[in-house]
Each structure stands twice: as structure tokens, then as C-alpha cells.
Image (tube, rainbow, N blue to C red; front, side, top):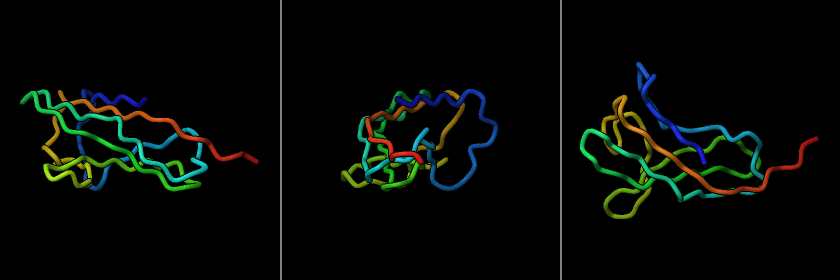
Length: 98
């Protein structure tokens, strides 16, 4: 499980958000157990992470109202602020090292 609190962020940047896993994934995977919490409104959005086989970068997505995955960034699905948090979790098999 990866938890992200935005309390120390001064610039939310641009582009799609991601997190890097500690080891590359042996297989391409989708982690669907995540949530973005918008503290100013009390709203929540489902968050997922996608990683390609052999990669460590877990790109982050939110599920829109029609069930489609959309890029999670500084203003989608909501404009983020320092009170917001998100988490994503799942299991994966690490690639053999060396």
C-alpha cells in the first residue's frame, strides 16, 4: 500500500501522476484498490495503478462517472490541494534481479 498526503506539496505540477515501485514487475498488472480523498468537499474517487511488465513505474488513473479510466493529474478528477490524500495498493511479482 502506498499512501500519499499532500501537506508538504507547494506545486502540484503537470502531467500524469505516478509512483515508482521498489522493484520492476515481472508481469503487467493493474492495481484497483485505491482512493483519492478530496477533503474540501468530502468526495472520493476510485484510483488505480498500471505497470507494464519489466517496469517499476506505476501510472495512476481515476475512474470517471462512466467507468472509464482517465489520467490522474493536478486537476483531474479535481483540483488538488494540500488537505487531499490518496492511496493505492496491490500485489505484484518482482522480476528476477541479476
